[in-house]
Image (cartoon, rainbow, N blue to C red):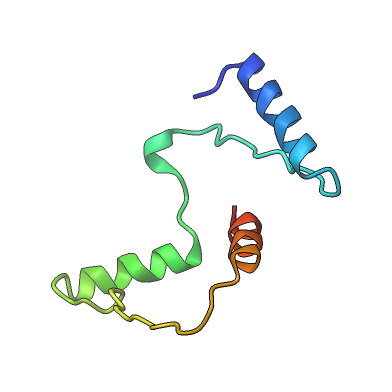
Length: 83
């Protein structure tokens, strides 16, 4: 966990790297950490896991082979957007 000074420094660094964007504040869960509410997608996964515990329904394995020259700038932009 970050202390207040570290959070402030992180927000400052993020603002410098992404000046055109607002950095949204992430609110903390005030309740018991062991009883955080599940999203609808998490509830669905839990439900199906109870019905068929040995099912690999949500383990989708796949690959894709890319050919041709790699555009490093495009890859960097995509990763920056994800982060």
